[in-house]
Amino acid sequence: MSVTKESFDTTEIHDAILNGQHGRVEALLNEALAAGYAPQALVNDVLHPAMNEVGERFSTGEFFLPDLILSAEAMKKAIVLLRPRLAASDGGAKSENVVIGTVSGDVHDIGKNLVIATLEGSGYNVIDLGVDVTPQRFVDAVREHDPVVVGFSALLSTTMVNVPKTIQALEDAGLRQGRLIAVGGAPMSQRNAEEWGADIYAADAGTAARMVNERVAEKAAGKLHTAEKKSHAAETVVHATGAVKLEPFVGGSDFERFKAVLRGNKVDRVPNFENLVDDQHVTKLLGRYAGNTLAIGGDPAKGASEATGRPMHARDFVEFAEMVGQDVLMVEALWTPFKRRGADGSLVAAMDRKLKTRADWEALVMPDDADIEDKMQYVREYKQATKGTRLGVGLLYAAIFQTLYEFAVGLADAMKMCYEQRDLMEEMLDASADYYARFTAKAVAEGVDFVYMADDFAWKEGLFIPPALFKEIWLPRAQKVVAPALAAGIPAMFHSDGKVDDAIDWLVDSGFVALNPMDPYGVDYRDYKKRFGNRITLMGNIDVEFPLVHGTPEEVDKDVRAHMEVLKAGGRYIAGSSHSVTNFVPHENYLTMLNAIHRYGVY
Image (cartoon, rainbow, N blue to C red; front, side, top):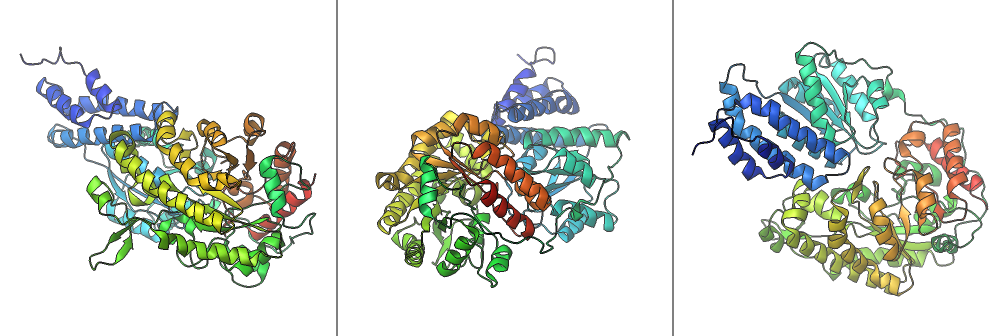
């Protein structure tokens, strides 16, 4: 019996989109077309409302990254099926172009790739320029593709200053008028969008496609004019003047202070700590080039491809740490060194996002003791250099989940694996955990003073994947990584950006004693102090975007003082930025932060 238009239930298509069932979506669409539904009606009345609901559920935390990705893929399949019919129908709309990229200086693309998935699912032809895209590349792409929308992404508050510069480059080239500018990323806000003259600000990937659809429709109807910038935000960076100097402070560098704060014991002052201080700040303080505090000739905090060179020389790090009052040095070993055989038989890093199947996985070469020794030589160097000082030496390491989704597999496929190939995901996590457990045991034998596991698994609204599922696949592996340290009485700290509320109980119960960085885009430090401040040491939260990059020294001082008034009480606070002190931070603001920490942090 054939299905009629009256008997066909389009809510089944809607539900299949929500459930990410692309095969079922295609079958149902074919039934709907056979029953007499017009392709454009299916897009307008069924598909777009379904994708809007997906976005809303993601924004409210009901859906997680795998849900969003699977739904977007189902939507994309639907559009691909309908597009020839749309083009053949009266008034069939062409696929509009969208150019999108992560701005210069920023190599993060998680949010950008999610937005691409939702835009492609909505029928746009997306030209992805990738990461670290210069203004000229944006100009060239806009000239070539004539997009209706140009999208700018930045994850770091230190690189978002390049968004208005790139918008200005489009204006200077005569390519701004007549098209929509969209901006998004963790550090950005509606205020930034208005200042820069952007037409669209999307707080997250879940709302991006809906907002683009709405603005494109308004533009097509002549109801929207491109925005004008309120100020030239490219000039908002505070430049160095040399007026601020590093002031004397109470209590020199001392790992016993750091360790006491991790345990909740009384100390003389709040410790200061940074994941990374960039090379220009180091140079200004030491009076010579010494690299950044993680590396010479590279920046491993940006990713595996930037983990080049060697760590800062120990003698330089010792001098720098004692100068700024930091109690610890760190050796970086963030990314699991998976490898594969190249065409010539040589081993190459498997960090190109080509790991998609079990066959790909089984072809990899697992990390071994030589990889451990490659890092352990620097642990020994640092331990030797700190003899006669009161400095501690630790590891910044073990991004077991992030290595997979950001470098080895790729975000979309890694998130889908958590749902559809969980056994493979767990096997890959097991391999990383086994490697880092051996790494930890060796570091303990070399006398390391603390371990600091860093593995981003959250965004500003919560965990990437459902907490119950993530706890099952990740937590036992994380526990295995730090077990040799905890068994030896060595403290373990943890880092993840984003809102990590759902994971804090697990971390505490697993023996982690500190949480960094209390990401200000997902965390209210006052709330965390009330809820968790007596159970785990809180670290960081002084916002890089404001006041450190865009504020004045007076505003930096005021912000540090406000943090101290809340977080200092009762101990268990280690002060620092919300991520790292990069070269975008004016040197005066960095020095002001240090001076304020030392001034207001005295007990």
